[in-house]
Length: 412
Image 1 (cartoon, rainbow, N blue to C red):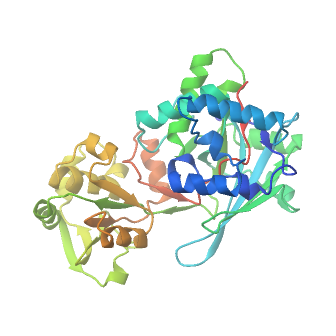
Image 2 (image 1 turned 90 degrees about the horizontal axis):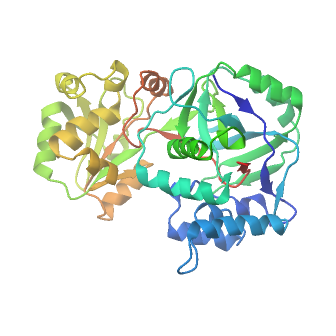
């Protein structure tokens, strides 16, 4: 059962900052050094100084984050609400075909539980490094700084919708052109409708597995009951028409081309295709990929289903239909001899969130080849999670991403 509650948030005082867009940021795990510098150039008050802290030489970055958070609150840049609220969010974005969609959700506190049926389901594997980083940041700041993205069955938007007809509390257009609009809803009747409507819901984590596991660890460290037993989530209906998953493509470097070629020919039907037809999106059947290198553009279709059955023996039927799992077992591990540790550490492996990015990586010589993957259907993600399994890393790319810095959840 999901326990979803409104909460008294900490948030930017919009009268004290240039704009909400100047102080929000993408998720920490997509920010590199140049982007971090660019965000702080927009405003030294940008949330990246807290969520991805860098302290002066010899100082602890997590203590620096806590001190920065406290200073912004004392200076009136951040303000704490006294009454609880939920925060409705719409995200208007462009799809690869140029159409515009709107994804609807809301931010609230959700009680942290173990993974399991009727509770919370993960869908991707996690790594220890990011969890340790997020845990140290949580200990220092005692806040959730960014929302976990989770999916729920059914819909509670009929209770929220009437409250987003007016002007939003804040609006941001990010670098991808996505328009984020936020409304603060303090109406207790809406809170009751949302809490009751999701009381029996099983939640599926779409993005933020490391942060959820951090929240579990932190709650147990503190012990007892209180706000620390909850975490900040943005909840979106599985039935929302704006819910989209894009494909995340695999990039390979330093590979043995003969071994890879042998693996491809052994397990797949291979066809030359024009470069503009390499994208496998929309193709039916399990195990369909595009392939690019500096000379070729191919379409690969799984022929050797027996090899998949053997490699994934004991896995659910849903897991055996995952393109990412098929590629991992037959090519990355089977043909190229990568280990699970190699894949986790990205040794000779990279990811691209668009075909043009994959092409550029090959053209620039950063990588030798790319496997293009189709988007994983939401229903398949759900089936794998319901079977108690987690998918290979980067099996899903939910778009658009949630911004950090709209609201913070106090844990005390």
